[in-house]
Length: 342
Image (tube, rainbow, N blue to C red; front, side):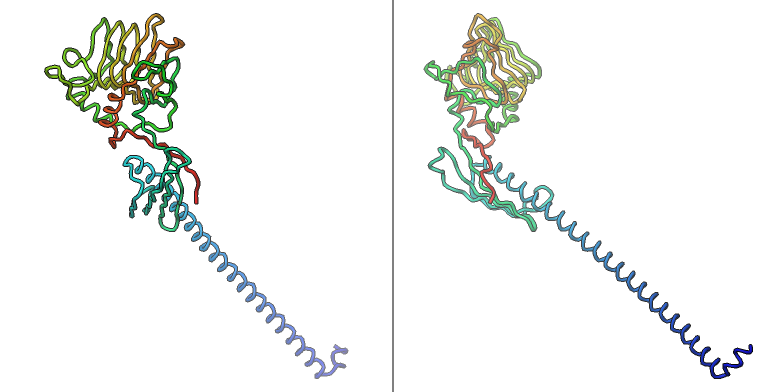
């Protein structure tokens, strides 16, 4: 108290004023710090919100772009297969609903490449929304009416002969990449109308023939012995066994396997739509004969008995089958591959 009194009233008042000013300055600095911190957090939050929104938009755009690209790619594949079925390689179509998108297709025909026999080069472009797929295809056009056997399976221990009976392995082709697009429903309907439809397996033996009588020929019917232009069509929902000098005629459709045994004879076209079917021979002493051709997904097996299955090419039977029962009525098939993307 004595010390304070010695300072004097003015000195005390000055100290108190400085102390008050200091405290007020501290409060101001704290307030500024709080405002700065809140502002920084707010700006950071806004930046994060904008980042999330932009990222979501980019993801949505990427998803839409991918969807558009796949739609365009699917449209290219669609265009190639449609052209293969119709034989038309120059057309344009818009508003095609494909793979969840809408695409515009342009197929540009090209000339046959002289250096690559029977090969056509085709440019196909498809656009969908903001994406496009552009590809060039090279296509091999093959007249399969020139084959006695044309299958996607294998051929073993089989002799292929021309129409004169001379061996010609060039008349057979196995492991083919593309099979003809056969109208199986039309074949079945024809067989039903002719009374040649079987819902179960069939066995022909003991010298019997099917069809028989005046229809014992590739063509149906044969009034007064005069051939018609319509083949017999036999449709079998199951397996077929032909043995003991049995005979069958016409276009024979078998959904299962075919067993040939003991000098049988098939005159016509054997068509097996299933990729797991087998045409095979099981007799060691006799040769089995097919006069016409074999087509489909089947394997043709002599089961180690070389030269026991003899197939004799008949061009008229093969052409009648292809012209009458392929989807586009063509004897040609087009195998293709993607040559390059541009």
